[in-house]
Image (cartoon, one colour):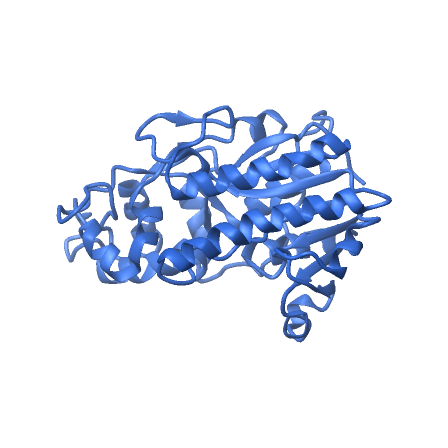
Length: 341
């Protein structure tokens, strides 16, 4: 399959591209900085084309003849402190990219059969202890509105007889990247301490839910969305066993082999939310609040998680004897009706 990917040089995109190549597919990576991307040895196996996914351009003709499109375009939430301009960049980079991808598919003489639109569990907003599935409604905060607007724009391809899957990604666990890039230094200073859920100046108790997923499994969910004929609509890209932040803190400290205190007792509280907001800005809310999101449709489609439990996922990432990185085998149960190109 020839698969067009926006955001292909990001964390999920480049790992998805590697997995696709190792399974005989041909990724086509769109980049604003194609020359720089091509100089990266990790990107040498792919065709890289120049273009801004938020703007119309010659790049859109490359969609013609592709079998699938994966849209991962979007400004990194953790790249800089949020202000009005950054929030506009976060929103516009997603919504406008979805608009231009839809336009490219409309213009194509031979249209792709599937659009996989990237989204996030921020779609749901904060819901306390409520279990959320793909059928749950959207929230009303900034990230929820951005996710909903992006998803709604991408829905236009369905009228073109193009299957559309929307992967709502949770907290991706990857060593030294994403949320763990910010959380790991905090755990080195305060091992075992929870982060968030108290609010203001109160000490954090870590009662908010963390809907996490190992990097290998989010790649697997995207591959499921591409390959499975019945994968349509929203798919929650989260592991089947979310945990409270307090449990995450204890497990992470155990994996790092750092006792929570000199007496190896986990601290029952952590830094106030206000301290994290001063350090990180408004983006701290992504860490200090959470949702209990379950991958109901992903499991129903037969996906077998490589890392269903948190401790196994963290040990795979932080073990001193980690095996070399490799793309996971496509873990769809037999008899699931999966289609393989």
